Structures are given as C-alpha cells and as structure tokens.
Image 1 (spheres, rainbow, N blue to C red):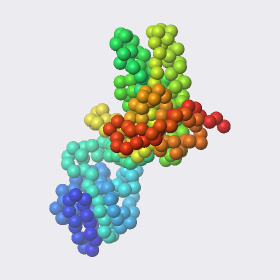
Image 2: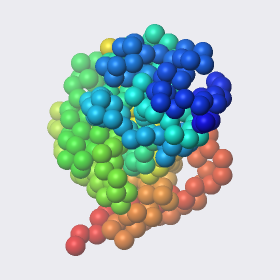
Image 3: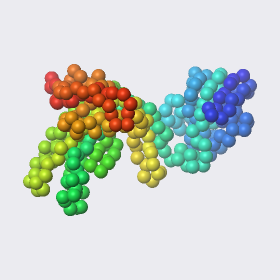
Image 4: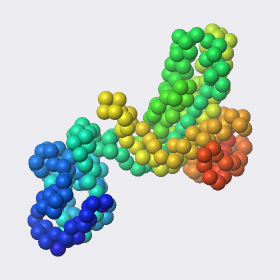
Length: 304
C-alpha cells in the first residue's frame, strides 16, 4: 500500500504497485495527459516530485533516454515509466492540450523553469530621453546599436548572458551555467567595470560625430530567480523572473541619485569585498520595496 498525493488534486491509496504512476492515476480517474499512450515517446505525462523521491524506483532506460534528450531535471519524472514504492507527493505539469503542445516542443531546462541563484546586472543610459529628442530617428537607432555592441561584447567576454534590452537599458545574467557564487559575482562586477571603460570608446565616437556624451548607471544584485523560456512559442525568450530581478533594477535606479556609476547589493558585496575597491556605502530604501538596503559603490578591482 502506498499513499500517492497529486498536489492540488487528490490523494490515492494504492495496493498494486506493479503499475506505473500513470496507470494508477488513470485508474483513479485523474485525467493524466499521455499523448504517446504511455510509451516514453513524449513527455506530456511528466510530473514534478514534491516529496518522497526516495520512494520512487530509479529511471529505467526508456525514461532516462527521453529525460536526457529533453533536458529534464532530476525532480521531473515520466509518470508512464515511474514505479512507486511508498508515500509520494507529485504535481502534474501538463494539464491540457496546450500544455501538451508546449511540452513536446520545449526542453525542460529552457521551457518549464528552474530556480537558480545568479548575479543580475542592470545598466541604463542617463538622460537618454533628452538625447533622443535632439537627434534623428535613424541616428538614435544607429547609436544605440553601436552602444549595445560595445556593452554586449563586455558581457559575453565575462561569461554573462544578455537577457534583454529595454529601450536604452540592458539586463544581463551571470551564473546561468555556473554554480559558484563568487565566480559569478566577480564576472558581473568585472563586466561592470569594463562597461565603464567601453563607454569611453562610445563617448569618443559620440563626441566626434554628434557632440554628445553618455553617462550610465549600473546596479548589480545576487539572488534567487526562476529561469526559463517565457512568451509565445514563436517568440519565447530565455529570461529570469523574481524579486531579485526587481532589486537589481531598483539598485540601478539609485546610481543617479548618489551620482555613482556602479552600485552593488549587500549580497553581492559578501562575495566580492576582498577583490574590489569600494567607495561610498549607503543604507537606503528601494522603490517599491520595504525596509532598508545596504548598497556599496564599486570604484575598481584589486589587481593581483
């Protein structure tokens, strides 16, 4: 006898444990999706194991082959191949035909989402709206593309992932494929310093051709996010969501108020403090957030 809890649905007491988890679910009236008929040729019967993973038999060859091809993480199991030995709590991940369609197209690591700690960098050009009012549309796009080319090269050279562009703003992630927090934080802060150096090259071009100069603000935070592909299937993008993203954005907003190009959070500071030269330290509230946050100005790197 095993107790099988389908989260947000029902609890089953089952004696026949020779059946697959899918067969047990169907037997008890749970409309469990299984497009391929339960033969490990799709992943629409996938479940996430919330509790009791030790009470499931290891993946058989068919499940392992499909899991590897889809990039499914260890806590995601195919119900059609999974055998239960004791109490377990699972949640179905594919609930209707639209879910099934998405599941068959996307790899798990790209589509469904995974929690991970990363360093999040936000940068923004100060006063860009006023700049855009003074120049032709073609020139604005040309200048932004030249600017983002310089900044993007810096991000990529420091093992970052360019998450998105927001007008004149850029969001980058460090640590999508690297678990070491200190390495990721140093990659992010090194990128920030090199972005200020790259800005000098951009400004040399702007001064010569447009009699303009840019100033930028960069805010960096380290924290837990959810990573995954988000959006319409034809236009989905791998991105990060979560409170840590909002904190990084708010930190960038503080750079203008205190006239500092680079500010990092206390979480970032904990991983880089021995390797950077610090300036101001401030305790401040962040827009839309409760409580105060310690922020640190980064002036340079300690070269060894």
